[in-house]
Length: 340
Picture (cartoon, one colour):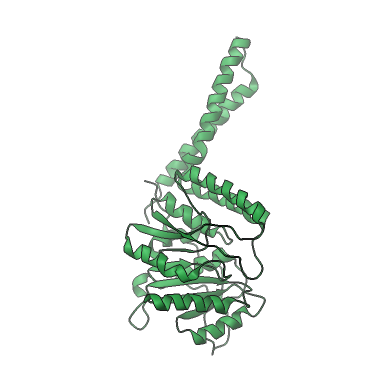
């Protein structure tokens, strides 16, 4: 069993936020630290579901998205809170969110004073969440947020499931001709490293148990690859993840995705997470191939020159041994981590 990271060593979030009500002045405050679940009670009852909604320059459609989410949750009967986080937008998004906070009683606005990225928003929002179930989604109208209650119900109906991911059945994002093959390759690498099928590696719509996710929040990078990270963290630590097929629409507004930069970070994050939880899976195959090639080449060298081994043969064999040693040492470190 692979050991899980220690939540006691979580780093403090660097992001100052303002969680004042609309009638108070904006102020810089220290990063909010989420209280333990049993302490997070308002008026005697904590909500069952916390929805974290990152908002960055979404002024034209954020109110429509909030209305859609609140209507679905009100009809579901679940108690909930909607944490609408403005990631230092340069348009009127924050003003729209303040209006929504006055209109919808379950909406709570969090304002960042500098842009931290989607991963930072989701990490801080998840720590602030008071619900047992945390939902991540986007405010760009691309995800069917009216189906959020379905994801929550899947978790409630099966206590063995720790995360439900909305698996997209189509790709409607920008740079579609480049994104589709690139994401397919990255997903196949992740499937090989994880040893299981992953229908959607980086969907932005998902629900998970907050208590299970807490130890892994400190691993989230600031950018879009945070969704990849939380998927791999759960899979690497034997937490069951289920997938709900969803339609994926064309986003409203301008995409923040940068193909080359973000695709590169996706690949790095997949490798980083596997190295963090299961380094043998990543390193040992490389080491064994190098050792095998070196051994075969050594046989050929001896057959051709009985008293001499080529320098590159020795280098191949030694490189394989060094990588194998590193893999075993990394695996020992992983397994020696204390339980959270």
